[in-house]
Length: 257
Image 1 (spheres, one colour):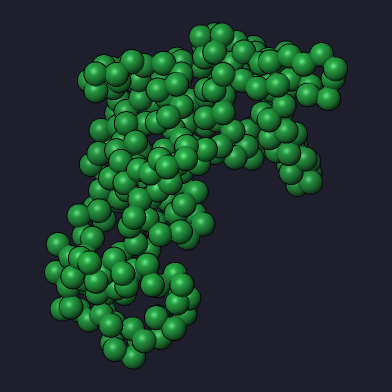
Image 2: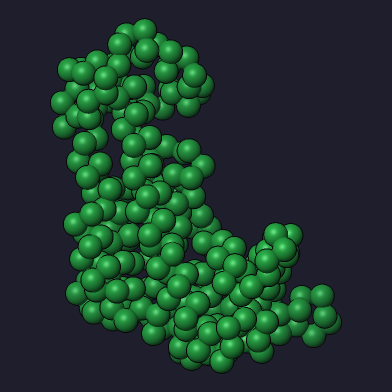
């Protein structure tokens, strides 16, 4: 059980009976992981659980800003590339996966009765955007003659790279090469953090990267990816993010300190 003085980490105003109530609502299978971790690090399991909850909340708050910034930056470049606001209906050759995401967004907006491009774009899921930085998949899979989308040439080199004006400098400072793959890896780390926090999965042991068997990043790695993405999108946004990130405030409070 936790108390205001039970840990030098975050302070939770919790009485013993309240702590017992909290532990009752958490499934034994889920809480066991926190108990095992707490035993190995000499902290209180419930404190660790509540800190993990706080970190997830902080992550979603930070990513809410990044998601809008990323969407708007890529939307702007796609509009320029297609020379029309509804670029999703242009001659840009999207692969089947991207096209399915677009069609779903359009269906969802039509149900609302207010079908405008801005709402379609806002309806696209976070995962749609990093997909545009991949190589590109099959176009018209049902046809006998399959073609592959060429996102590297048709999207990245044609203009999407300009959505990240700070990217080259950020990568250079890390001794790395700025390209679509580098940018994709960075955004996928942010996306993985978003999904894990949004699905109420624990963060204290890190984040498994989807599609990368055996690859796990720490929450510090994930936070760093958020900061780097902000800097890639806009220098001033990056500066603001470094000063105001809620994750940055929460990470050092992990019990025990």
